[in-house]
Length: 396
Image 1 (spheres, rainbow, N blue to C red):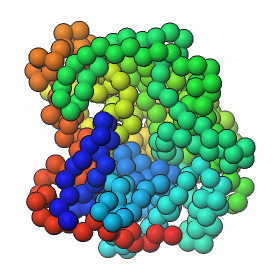
Image 2: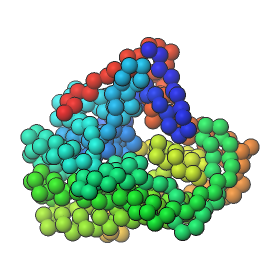
Image 3: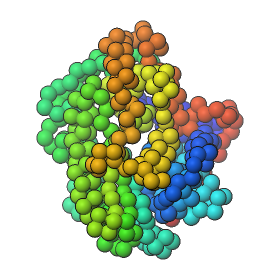
Image 4: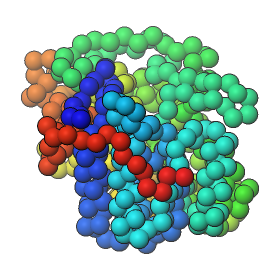
C-alpha cells in the first residue's frame, strides 16, 4: 500500500516503515561517526521506541557496544492500519543491532504493570545477569496503578490561576491567543501519579530486589524546565508538579544506589518536537522561535545529538555528571543561554501569524513533526508501495 500522513490535531495516525528505518539508521550513523563511549555494558530503556528513549538506546548500543532491552507500548500493523512509528523504529534498531552482533531485545506492553516489570527482570537475568544503566523515558497520558488498580489521567494545565498567552497551530502557522483554566487538586494529583517518579522508583526497587541491578549502576530519567514564558503551563503547571516529584525520586534513588556505588539523575533536556510537546499550548510557538534562533547561532541539537552529549560529556567518558554536584544534569544549557533566550523573547513579543515565517522556524517544526512518523525523510519514495506489516526481531 502507499502510505501517506494522516493527521488529527497533534496526532499523525499513520507511520511509514521505510521512513522510520531510514531515520533510525541516520541516528546510528551519527553515533558511530563519533568517539566510542566508555560505557555502559547492559542497558534497560523503559520507554524506548521514540524520541529521547530511542536515542538513548541507539547511543548505548552503537556508541558503547552495549547490550540493550527496550520496553515500550506500540502497536503492529493491522489490516489497512499501519503500525505505530515506535514499532517501526524498534524493528529497524533490532535489525541493525543484530547485524552488529549486539544482544538486543524488545518487550511490548504496559511499563506501569507488574507483569511487564517481572517479564523484563526475568529476561535481564537470563540474558544479561544484571543491567548497569536504566533509562526511564516513559511518556503516557494514563497510568493504572499496579497495586490499587486506580487509573489516573494526566492534564496539561496551569496551577492556581488561568493562563493566557500566544499559541500556534503548527499545521497552518496561525498565531492566536489561548486561555487555559487552572487544574483542580485532583487533576494535579492524577498528573503526578502518571508523570511523576513513582513508577521509576518501582522499576529500580524491583530490579534491585531481584538482583538484576549491577553494583554501581546508573539510572537517569528525563525532564524539561524551559523559559519563563512557558513556566505557567509547564514548570509551574501540572506537568511541572509531576517533574518536581520526579526530581524528589531521583534524590531518594541516589541515596539508595549510593550504597553500592550507584547514582541517579534527572537529565533536563532541550525543547524538541515530540508528540507530547505538540499537544501543549504555547509550546509549539516557543519551539519554532527557539529553533530559528538556535539554528542561526549554530547551536541546534536533535534527539540523538543531545543523547550522545549526555552520555559522552556527563554519564561516561570521565565526564562530570552534574556540574553543580546535584542530581540534575542540564543539557538544556545551550537552549537556556542568555543570548539565546533574549533573542527568543524579543521575537516572541513581536510574533504574529503574518511574520511567523520571518521570526520562527515553522517549516523546521513541521518537518520534525512528520519525521516522528517516518515522513518527509530524504531518500524515501513515498509514492512507492510499502508493506505495513513489519516484524520486530527479538520481540519477547
